[in-house]
Image (cartoon, rainbow, N blue to C red; front, top):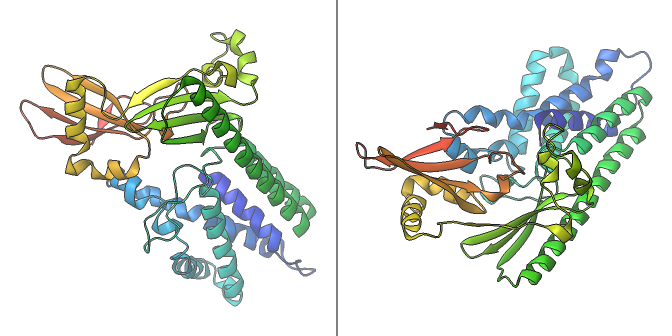
Length: 354
């Protein structure tokens, strides 16, 4: 989930447990719980500062691990409480309350991140296993809107019940998304049966713009078939505007269940030369982090020139409509340097970087 939504949701959560402010107490004190919880709720995303050090290791090992761990939550609670008290000594007498709000903010962040497909290492360092419900896209404007409106209303009426009611709406929305996820998977399985395709795993992944948008992925050993589904069928009504409204293709790419269009991908390609090159790169020791990270890895493309050859992989989790996929990694070698070297393709670009 995006950091702003995390901070606002943390602030909303603080309003749900905050006691009544004594008469005559300064308004600035009244807003301390909200500010503290919002700060703590945004804090776990500070791990993004590690991305420039080693992007691939960050994706596989560092992101959503030590700052998102329930095991390490007491450590972060003590540390952040100490920082807040040091910066605002007048809050010293409220140390216990401050630590409670810090813990609440950290927990709220972890809970929201569990909704997305990336996965969160909630038991790090005891376990590096990631957990995810996969119900919500990483940026969900509807969820964010409910949270923002809920915070505004709770600040106006200054009652715990208001904040708790808004949080309940968020929970109901997520439950609705879970229902849609199951429905999308069932639709996918029915479509797969019609195609008489062998399947080993079928999943539905949330997509942007609408909770009714889903990507269904059918895994068939080292091959995949996937389709974009609009459970509500709204996208079909927008087809007549295709080419006239900017970015409308992002929405119309999702098709009603009765007109789903399937794409096929494979991990190693289909031609003997593709298979040889892709297997060489995929099994390289320097590519181990990407093997661990990618859940639905595919051969993205092979670039050949007179000087060098590059083999690129991507993860179907991050193929979003007509956008360039995120997290595309590969290896290149040349006549001058026959050793394979690790590279990545930058976000929203085909420019490569180490």
